[in-house]
Image (cartoon, rainbow, N blue to C red; front, side, top):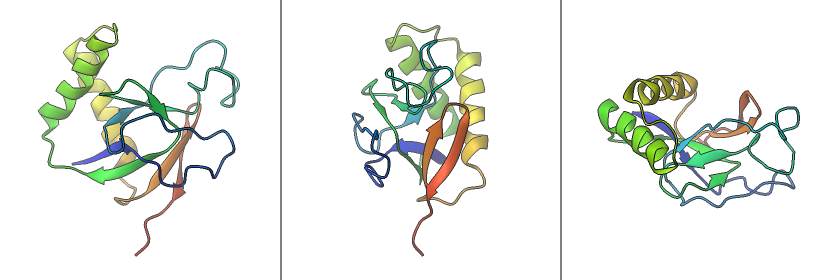
Length: 129
């Protein structure tokens, strides 16, 4: 299954890049706070980051990886991360988020590095063939 994982690759391409996640951990796209809602380069950084499901830290770069995870395990990883962070861990919410993330990466090749600018997620770098 193709999913998003944290990566250091291409870090530094933007001067405000950061990587505080565990390399290779599953990531999600979190909500944007009021401060950063209009500016992905805001001080909070949430408008340009991907959140690590294990570390609960963030990174500005994510990679599309092919993993042996089952769909149910992926949903559970999202659900349990939300619960650990104090969010509503409802399984339907986690399943909906999993579906959105899977759809997001479906058409991009494994190894692609992506970045986020508020609601826009774009490829920063394609894999070398």
